[in-house]
Length: 130
Image (cartoon, rainbow, N blue to C red; front, side, top):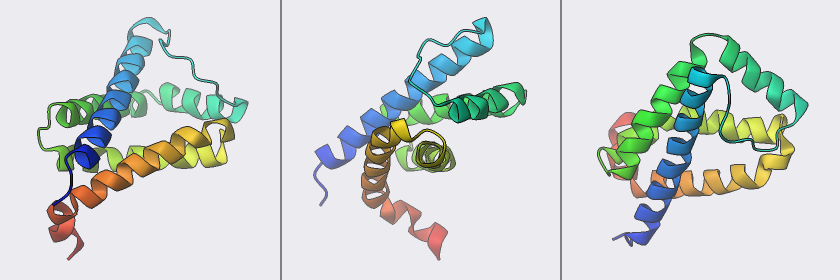
């Protein structure tokens, strides 16, 4: 039996992280201004600008962030919510490793929290890996 703290804490922290990300992303779409300004390298800013200027990736990504964050925070299909976020989490981790090394500590924490949830929900993913 997995202690609840090793499931609930990462679930809530990841949910909060992506809820803030979604709110910030929608604020940018509505006003052109971000609410959160983390330190980002010039290459990282160019990548983020390309996502925003694509016209569809940014809104799609922020919608996924919002839906998955709410699923994690309200504990509604959290394994499915995490599955929705896995491609975005992968890009975030690679983004910090390749384009924005200043954010590597955030990437490490996100990777650890995600790993904890993958282990916790491994029985729910078993059918996908057969």
